[in-house]
Length: 180
Figure 1 (cartoon, rainbow, N blue to C red):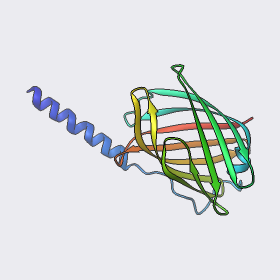
Figure 2: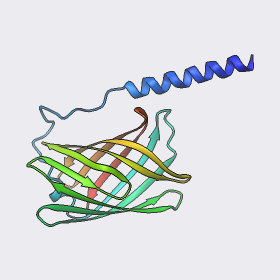
Figure 3: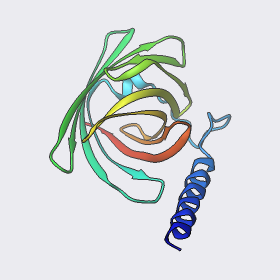
Figure 4: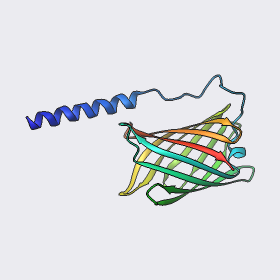
């Protein structure tokens, strides 16, 4: 009987995970909700602060954080120094080096990122995809990010990142950026 319960629980968890992984994600828009134009180099140059949390596919919120960002644009490269402060007191710094590769396209690197991140701006929207060895309490976890940003106002940006592992969504990061 115990073995049967275990198998039923395992099937239920697998089904929920599969269902969550199949839910729709945004697409690069053909039409826009606003006439604003997101330019990463303009938005992130200078000081920015962000507040966010990670939510797993079961709805649990195991971690919240804030980020102070110092951005420098030299005409070709946008360098973002991100200082994270987690709700448990842990800190982390990530330094992104983003290169504008076209009118609306970007590539980027940061410690822990495998290969090169790629992104595209369209109107008030930016989509950014990359694979990273993400620091966690037990070490690191290799995950994929499908990161979406929307310019809400000239000084406010909403970010929703879909996080997956082995092709299965494990959660989402939701962030709110504010330019200082």
